[in-house]
Length: 270
Length: 270
Image: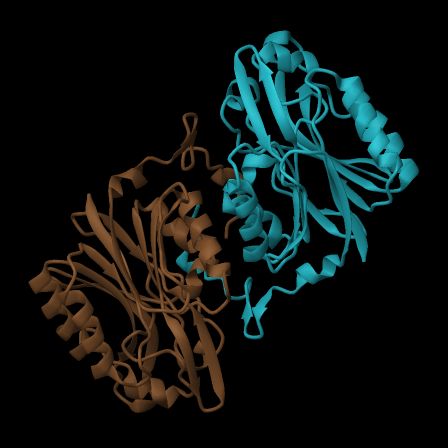
């Protein structure tokens, strides 16, 4: 059994120090093997220009991942979180930013995933992800990362699940009320994997734009059962015990293994 | 606008005449463009041997489809239903039966789909489907067929949706309480298509086996809204008006077209 959880909170836009402090404070008081935090939780989400993103995004590795590595090394745990990644270029004009997720563990930075499916105005401020959907063997479990809107596309989860992913770590800032939570439940079911959705809550209002996030972070079992769920509009730090190997059994009935039962020869190429 | 609906009923096992009579009676009293009936609704579902299936299955075209064609020609409507299909062979030993769906319209039999993903003991009594996932242009709409457990596999719906399917016609005998209905809702959302789930209700008990079906047939809009829903345990015939072309717009936000946003280059081959 391992301890997995989410920390649903409300980052302060643009205040990296405050957000890191909040995260560190939460981590200090818990015992967990894997903790998932929301999307873009170091900077806040509601950017209104590419320059703003470039200003607040960081290289990976960089100051934020180094700070968090100190925590995960000392607490001997894994952390998955969403953050704005800046890719340094020779000249400012070719600078690119990604809406990324990072995986940081007891030995430091392990992986970076760049959001493949950008939502709304993210398309104006971030480059489309170019990293493959990849499973990471953490020793205690095999984990994969998706960021928010990625979950809408069944092929993304499927690619991770077919590689042996047991737990999807899903930093999010979901805004379509209720839908995101329904979708992740079905993704868990159809792949028989665990799912840790770490959603933020609260409202951001900047330069005439406004977004309200739906909270309701959840941990789903391979059979679709909701193992933990946060309220929609308040801070919530929840950690539960799961046995990741339960995700290796793809049987939905005694005679139906969901992976064996697939008929790729009948599906069109995606 | 076209009129689509489902007829949720409880077939009598083995009594083809009674089931056809029931269907005919329902059709006589309605006005619909497309009506969907449950899986294996001509024979009942709970077979307990291959011989039983062979006995009750029919060739397509055959007596049942001819009977139903008379109705659809006269009522100028489309019908999708699940039935056991027998494929005649030279010798009895190579006889094959499929858990099929048929599409019958104003001009007669239009298509047959053979269930690709067999559930539980269907594997003992039916051959795995060998028909491709194919969209049919009905003039009034583009429709695709899936049978019950097929919906668990996102690739099947995706294959139909990418070919331009606007409405999935889904004859079912769902037994996993609540899950099937959740899954079809998410399938509609993730492909932005209409979905007509025609589920049966009631309990079958035969030769020491017993199954209870979950009813709750539903019609789902491309945005996931439930447009019509039957109760879990009674007969229900519901018809609503929809505009199939609403399924051609794949935007989930002004900037997100779900098909344009796909990243096939990042998905592994299924």
